[in-house]
Length: 199
Image (cartoon, rainbow, N blue to C red; front, side, top):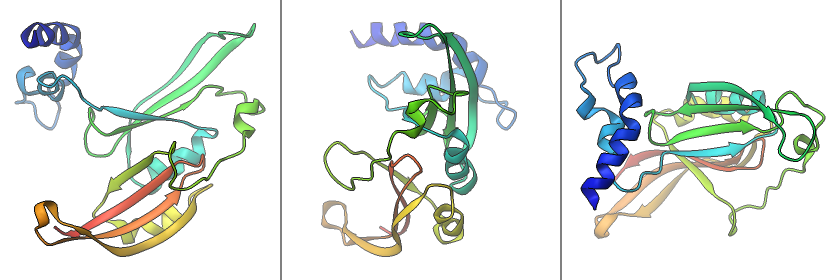
């Protein structure tokens, strides 16, 4: 069963693997050790979290400019609207932190080009750490350097500035020391940006 699943997945992914497996930085990489080929060895892979946003430029000011993520996909998609007699325009962007196939953040505006659409004026909910809310957690080695740009990004609301926090270590092996910051983005998504100091 596992081998047939892998064969099917490999057949679906092979064109993309072939197109992306050899980069300018690592021309010696082969298809067999590309990220997608390696991912096919696992039956489940969390690749991306996609955030529905109100203002794409405000979101990019945080995720691209302040956090330092890199855009790897940016497209406008035009299609007939599902319930209205008009064209729907959406913009979909993928940003990577350190990897193009794992831990990617997507940003999508389903009414891109329609600034007066009610979706863009829907109230932002900042409900805190309660069930039904997710937390996007990033690790960085540059928290203090990036903090002024993050806290000053459009729509960002700071919950707590960077502060030292200690967590129990794995298997009781001492403490893990982390510099932790918490904030909302412009759409009310909860974010932790942390810097691990020792573990």
